[in-house]
Image (tube, rainbow, N blue to C red; front, side, top):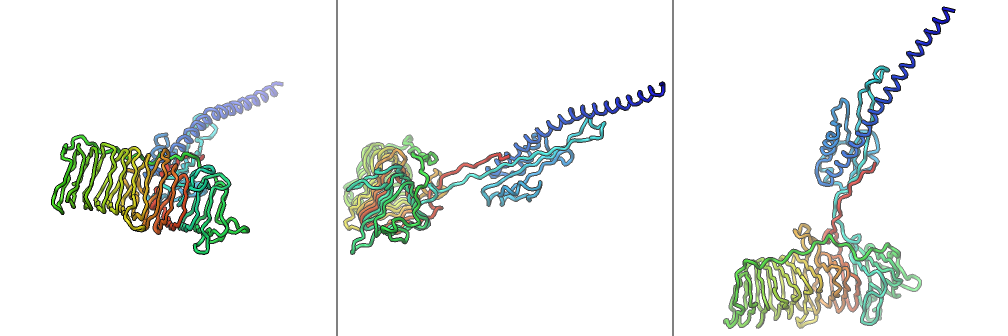
Length: 543
């Protein structure tokens, strides 16, 4: 009996020891496991923050590796190689950063400059020293956390997918015609429209959003429309048999060529063009000298007059034998009127800014020639009119209207195909309420501002905000060369009257478009010469 009791006591002691060991193990699991879970949570937060920091650095053209390492260190993981390591994988392909840790090379600055979209994985490995668990031989607990972020750098891209002709009216019968209401894009008469490297988009959902046809008489070629990327239409279309579209002759059995796409998504109106900046305020008239003289006349023929910047409180009249006028560089604040009478004038200037203080029309008349290094015009409601075979040349030209002011080339040059001339290698028209009109043999050579224009109008030739519904009429003309975009989203554009346009490098965005008469238009579309809408960078955490 005594020996059995000693054996039972020994067994109880063993069980007690095993129980204590188990209790220690459970305690260690609770304490050290909790510490490991906390480390795992902290490491995940650090990985998330570091991945987003790298993405933001790429969007801001700075070093993503430095940004990620610094943020990880700020969150307690300094990549010391002893108790934690931080690994950064960056690639332009998502699958590359889903592979093994450290599978992508470290990229140099050129890699980030030459690519636009990236995926970043940050992996944090951490080793936490145990406390109680050491008793059972567990010296540390290892964890791993990773995060993947995505960044697409900010960029610029053409409006409406880079289509050269965009017609925004959303429904039928929105355009007007002198006979009846037709589609929102009407091309008829003896018209040839050629669009290279681009195509047409029509936003109308009506069954007859586009009407093309007419003019196919024995003495005239049929209406012809050629594009390189086709015609995309939200609604439907009517193409008159005999019309030629993209190399196909329309017939009853072949009413639609394969280059026409119906049922494309409709774009919302009004369009959000808030990224197009408002024009700068007119230069201040404060501090300019007051000039009371208003008339320069009764000079012998061939006289030369020089004008200085200032406040012309009684206006400007130049006539009576003055043939040469020089306007010195600076600001001209002009009251009441600005008139050049009595035959042709040669008006030259440096960088001139004219700020009308009253709503008068400035008319360049009688075969006059204006030639400026730079001319900025800030009218409110008075128009700028080039008339009577006159010429306006300006290396830099700005028409910053503040009200209903318009720019008009009257076309009174005498001959049907000769008339007024306007040339500028850096021109921009901001027209909030007025319009732009030329007719009667106008000659135009207008290039939009360069990409680096300080006011943000690079590639934009004419802009009429959504509130401006005054039609734009292009009536007649030859020798017309446009480079840059015409953005007129709520405007009817009418082109008619023997217009012969061989050189349009443009994107036209209008509410409705009517082309009729004996027109020939050739648009050679280069996306880099058009206005590019800013697209903000995209930064996101994927996992």
